[in-house]
Amino acid sequence: MKLYFLRHGIAEDISKSGLDRDRKLTEPGVEELEREADALKRLGLNLDLLLTSPYARAFKTAEIVANRLGLKDQFQTESLLAPGFNLGSLQKMNADFDDARSVMLVGHNFDFPIIAGQLCGGAEIDLKKGGLIRIDVDIFEPGQGTLEWVLTPKHLLAMAGR
Image (cartoon, rainbow, N blue to C red; front, side, top):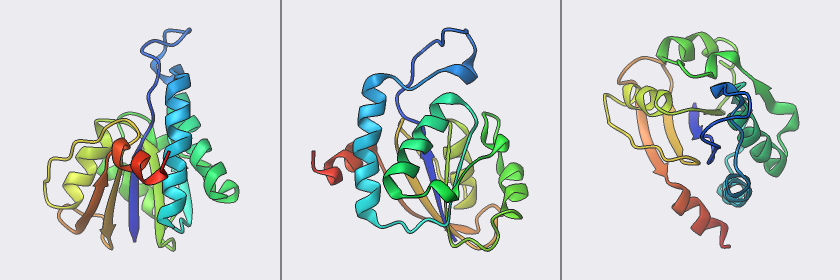
């Protein structure tokens, strides 16, 4: 399986409610993600499923990507992707998408780089807001994945050509 970890885009520091879950993408964050979504389209990821954290900033990130890639039917919210997501959560989720060959997860730091690092044997990965990691994995156990690449927002924006 090709497993993609997409960190949400640039978000406000504090939401109007004061709750972390309500922090929204900033206007520049939305604009940057729209451009990054163009790059994702150019990559031809052929996603079977797009799962997102229910937190506002991740949901909006996933919504932008789903719209650009034509994935409205493959787009779902997954409560396990909220902050605190871990390898055990991924293993539970795998039962739901076991038949998929290409899955994108949209969520948060520090969870995503830690899990991606665990899957590929303990690597330390720096994942910027809007960054994307690809791990190829058959068994969701430590050291059983292969880190294929990490794309920073700068890489994606350069690929978008704008």
